[in-house]
Image (tube, rainbow, N blue to C red):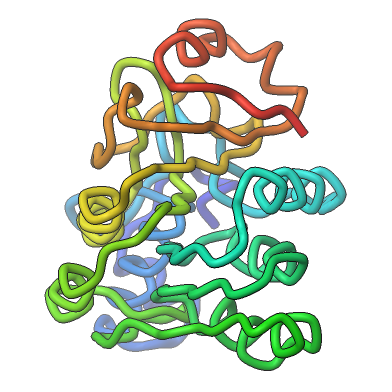
Amino acid sequence: MLEALRSVSTDRIVDELGVSRETVRRDLIALEALGELRRSHGGAVLPDPLPAAFGRPAADGRHLRAIARAVGGRLSNGQTLYMEAGYMAAHIADALGTLHGITLITNSFEAATRVASGEDHVAHGNRAFVLGGAVIAPLPATQGDRTIAEIHRYTADTALLFPTAIDARHGTTHADLARAELGRAMAANARNIMVIADDARIGVNSHASYCAADRVSVLVTNRKSEAREGYDELAGAVGSVALA
């Protein structure tokens, strides 16, 4: 409906879909967290200036897997890692299977399950811990004050962050404040910060900033990012860039 109309009221969603206002409210919150829309008074609108498809995994996952492999190549055996939930979590979890003695601390159920049950992970002695907290669908993850409190109980070698967007001026940003606050806590309790973002997220910003560009140790992205407006400024602001 949003792609066709660009804005839609809660009342119209209720009428069209035959669901309760509470269901609509919950789903709009969840979709805003994924960067699919922006809630407005009485309804929702498409994100602006972000494109309508922003925040969705790419239809072709090959470059996402290439980015994930590049991430694995920049990490070391025996490290403790924070990883926030996001569109790259499953790919990164699989890529970590090449490493030994990894401890993953994450709010992503999918990433934790892949590490805990993957043959390579088990053989290499990798472990996963899920942060406690509230679960808000459709993202299969925990978040909120309890999750953030648990983050502060640990320290990590590297925080792996998947922002909705990143640019030189605002750093990493999310469409949802709760996700931004969780990422901020991970960044604050890690010695290094690695940001993973495909080209669609480069040189733009979303609503809530949570990590300045000059605090990013490594930005891992695909080569198409070099053609994005704002890439050169961003590359100059972060510690280094790894192109997959």
